[in-house]
Image (cartoon, rainbow, N blue to C red; front, side, top):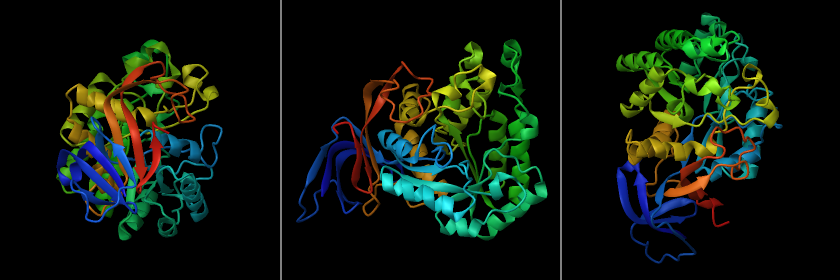
Length: 425
């Protein structure tokens, strides 16, 4: 039996915030506070001055395998997830080949199980090869472990085809994830359309590229009666549309990528390709709207939207580089910075990292009640660390925080009661 002693246990799902001991046996939480009778402690983890919480659940992590192993692998990124305190992660279908067959879905899970660092939940393609015409075999993909279905950022231009997908998903109560983007409006844009893009001479992506697709999706979601989630929302107006739909009874939720809470299009002025992301960093007004939605719970979860790249993908003129940031290992420190800034409290942050994403996905996770699977993150909120290429476990070193010191360090990560990461190792 493992004893985690004297830590500040924060479990928003069960309204727990107290300094206590936690006992784990056979991969489960067996007691909180008092030692179970006749129990033998085989390992003790001292969590004094540290926070003990459910393992973080990340709603968007691009693992790059299969197909893009020059950028990262399942082994490298699940190891990075463990170092980041992330025990469960959702993998979008944008692999090569796409997750539109049971073989690919099972391959990803087999390799994740072999690495044994984090639980990987693949998202199946909504349409074959994400091309937007033929439905993917959703029922068999679900049986093979796909947690939800999405067409990622590949627009399904034919609304009739999209409606057919949503109706089929609704029939089986499958969750559909939208990364709302009208690619005809994106065209060859590389950053937010506004004064900054004009000053820099770069082609912009208008806000309407997201909001038009959000509006269309919401109307079709209502018609189909499907459960839906909007991932990595970047515009204030999108949140308004989603919130209105939710208030009208639609079963819709939303998350935001951590970098959209800190950066705007102004950060791209130095042509730093690390700030080239999709969806693009938006205006100050949009950022303020996203932060406000976080406080009001109009955004239910925060994710990393981790997109690792090899060095060559970012070493080119801004418009010619590939979009995406390496964000797994900075997710928790940046979340703690939101707490330090007084925007949300520590319990709200942990809720948006744990039980809220679990509820969105409909999985039994994000809780540390007695009997729950012992997925646990233990971190020191005051410890600082320097972000360098060497300190990042991820194969993707494309972080805007290289050379910066961040506060908040994961000390131990347990996956089903097994220690998968420890600074003592």
